[in-house]
Length: 420
Ligand code: EPZ
Image 1 (cartoon, protein in one colour):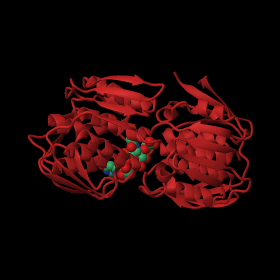
Image 2: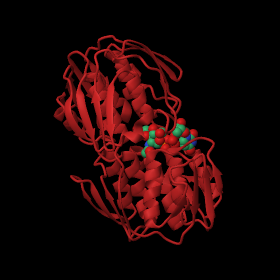
Image 3: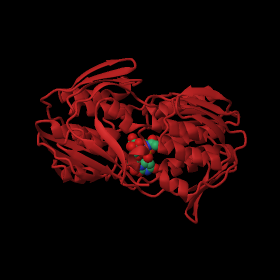
Image 4: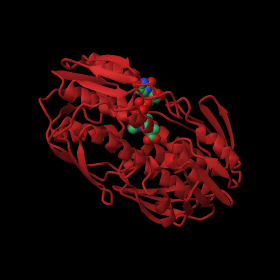
């Protein structure tokens, strides 16, 4: 059933909000659970659509689980995992199911995962994943749409990614935990979610050195055991709420957040004039009347995160002046621009650069969500546009934000979920 958010702009956000666990950490951790038949216990797992899709995929593989959606504790029993095919129906809902390739290859020496297509933000090939699997001794063919990986035995090797890839790094780390000898991954992604996965794998008994750095060394072990792990807070959800407070000139405290995972983003938000105060597990945000235009460009961690580009663009719509936003990671991550223009935004696109002329009042209208983070930016714009904004197809947003409208309502926003 298609649903929409109906938002009445103009309310200042006040109070505190608790951030959920990171979707992009929970997904690789769920995939990693099939590496051991002793099970895995995860805490702070977000109850979002992408996690539910990954759990469906795990069920197909014979995994049993008990998910307490309220408190986020997930107990996984992976004692009966079988290497069945991961079908199109799973992949079309969530391309991150490719994260099952590495663990299936490592544990069963074969993986049948339907080949992911592109998505709204870009072609998103997995050539780097496949090249790395081949370096570890796997053969790769495509059969009736399935990517088929097979091996007699995985052997450690030297892998240097010519492009930083988050799930590529995660997939190859998981593929190499049982490989014979040592695997070195150069130019590894160092996103906090990659580090979170490595920490959990080490708790399960994997031998990984250089965790959190661009050079990972994995020494193959015989098997992995049971572990208990808490998913890190979702830095992208936290960043989204920072912008929500800033654009409504509000004052909020974001709890269960890790500000150290948002250095580049928070420093740009402060450059725009927003008042930020941080502690070990919170971010306090105070909006100001006169925001300043700031240029950003996205890059792999620890640079400005591409997943907060659309949200930051909305902040720039409130700032006086012109800001230049350069998207370096995905070739088509400006889907939100067309929609923001319906609200009266003045944005000029030139290839992978958006020129944002801020300071113009926005007026509520019907807009359509196209991808996860773009949909969040449309809600943020609706929070300060004059009148009513209706954001359609919010299933995109439900993929990665838990109870988004409930959290915003608790902060004073006028927002409700309706049938489309
Ligand atoms: C992860 O996607 C995240 N998803 C994305 O978050 C995030 O935007 C992205 O990393 C960048 O930070 C998950 O972690 C589940 P990449 P991923 O491989 O791993 C190209 C969200 O909103 N590339 O780091 O798919 C690719 O096309 C989502 O939660 C290749 O060319 O991203 C892109 O241009 C959206 N070949 C760039 O590299 C490959 O084999 C970075 O992609 C792999 C990637």
